[in-house]
Image: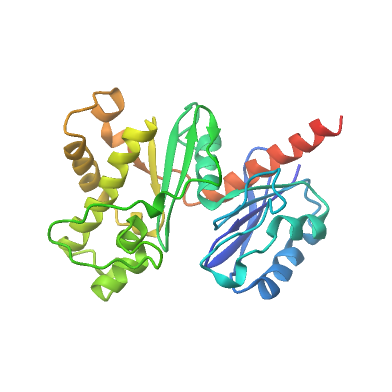
Length: 296
């Protein structure tokens, strides 16, 4: 069986083919410009591949409510050229196959749940920290959607006592994304994160904000594992700093086996940055099975 995967990011669209075991057979990258430019290239890639279904994990916000007239749309995206675009409808019309749909971060989380280090768990959290910050939540054995889907990157935070930065988020200023995403690091310090590895204050602030968010999410969601992905988390010196600060912020209030083994509780992504594509393959497999069940 051949399945299509579309990891639709704000910078690039990764198109891939996979099999029923989640194995990636090939993939290509197409720049994210605007629908008129980018979508014909995506459709051209998949058109002659004879896929059984397609899974899309997409930047958002997105409408994930199957009962909504705008299900499958990118909604109020800050990427204005994509706001209000019916990405699921466009792919269904072009390919005539079932199309599974979720957020980009839920796609990465689904990859880890199905093929990675969150297998067998009922509650998991995935946070990606890169160009933006987004979160996926798996609770009681299901991806969390709710009225829309979690937007964990826009939690408001308490400022570090030594930090006077105004924040970069155009909506909330000093939210997690506005303080800790890659563009905020570059705006604040005048260099990209990769060029700041040896500046301890950069990572003191960064670990403080990420740890604060995680401590709150631990108390709210009680995940069995927290997975951190995205380009900023390639700065591996962050992990011990974040773990230490999380324990300090929780201040002994919780005592669980996970927190006692925090090195295996707050962890980097495990699938060599392919977790998003692998999650898309799973979305495609599940959508094909759903469509078959409804047509019996």
